[in-house]
Length: 231
Image 1: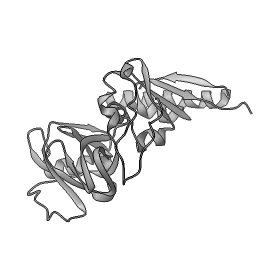
Image 2: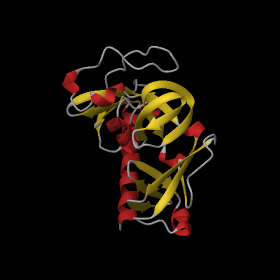
Image 3: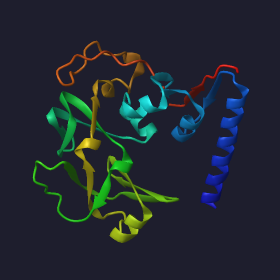
Image 4: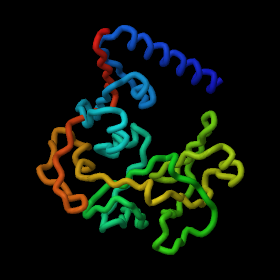
């Protein structure tokens, strides 16, 4: 019954998106689903605790989420750590590699579909282009042709066939594997601010590859906006 409900919801959302497009007028759509936001909106505003914390296109939000909250809403893994060049020491103790050099406090961004799961040793050689992080499976949810596997603070998206082949289940120790080229780095300065929007935006930000950064634009999680000029 759940897949049936999902199909109905998707059909209704697609019909509403077409109605909005045909109307050709600026429209505000409120949703808790990032997938719906992408379907409806030319621009997305994410709200947290009543304040806009990020605003931009759906691609911009996914590419550089302003906080862990925004990243979770957009379905992107957001891991805090300390960077030194192309290596990032995660707060959890593991070290990962990236092709995006940085210095200081950063957030490592990994899309769930970039992560594969394996069994066995996660030692690696330290210079591998692959990141190998040991983790324990907390939850497995299969939806259609994809399976979302929660590994502590990391979520991987794999195929149901992989889940069956590896006998992935809660409590199983696995290795999360992803490429250094899929490991993006963003500034982590807002992570301490998002818990209290009234605290404001700090004046100074960490540097990335030695370049001073500007304060990010204001932005928020349930508001979606589509603007289309009448034809």
